[in-house]
Length: 494
Figure (tube, rainbow, N blue to C red):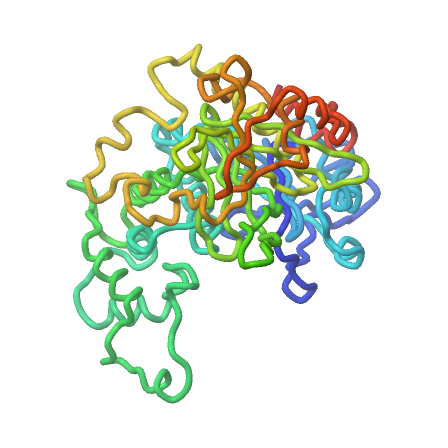
């Protein structure tokens, strides 16, 4: 499974789109519906659907859309429902996996039985998680750029990609240019933007008043903050030099500009997983509880995003972390992330515990992304996974990556997490050890100790006696090779 995603806060039946991708028309023939990022449908009439693999369907879609060869690397076929998202490997047979969908949901989600029984996946043509951002900048085909643009736009508008207000406005301005044409000063442009505001900005920036005042807000009314910022950004969108700026002009420049701006988001092009983390203990009784999170994993690293607040809680590149997962039979599956931290001036190792039935999938994806990066370093040492060095430096200072901004939604908020802090001897695994090259493995004995300490508390130095004592409390299960439906993730594209 190249990428898998559950849905935080499982939606009710009324909120789901039960779009089936298969319609039987005979014993050997069937109509297959493949959905694009803009929700348009590519109908395919195929023979022997049960034995057809994803590579063959991928080729059929490319032929219908007349896409160039690069599309084979850029896009992949996904099985998607509100409860789970699965990127398919070329050898997978979508029809058979669709028949196994209930088993996949039971294994990798916490969905209620009723939701599992009614959930049905659709087949979608979407960006390949393993396609590097740097290669997107080398694409010139307008249709490929448009499909990438539509997918990125959908993720921004749905707040799957958390963005600062300034970036939402800059990205929304490019959408205005694509949909409305070049900016024309005057009231008609403002009205057109206002009427379709939710097509340009995420919902939380489109809030409007209710009641009589909102109804009377007419043609001469003053624009709201989000709307005014969008208009200001729209008028600054530059046209291609020497090109036709009319409505029918090529939009490749604006598609590319949207993608380049999206590349500043550290989780662009990621696979989404869902889980929960412990909240920091609060109050006299030290009550904590859990909060739902989205774990975004890409070729660049891992980001833990607050599902409700839509901001990053923790962002780590692979060279900054170690990881593993545990799946004890009588306990919850957990993904462990270990990274360097500081507690009251003392260097510590920090462990974040992410509860998720998809922990094994996340662990496998992290491992494979690291392997891909190591291979990329050997074949192209002059480039990094994040793209050519000039990609960010060529941007104006006001458009540098959001991590430069104080209080940005993509900055880590460790104070909102409950981590396990501990210190190890320097001759063991410590701060000087290179991360991103291996798993935590036996070091996960430490968190099982009854004397664990959490974020904000005094750090605890593990002694040899205490470490030995923990072995009775915790047995690390090594990640086994996944077979059957789980094969979708581990060993992806190996």
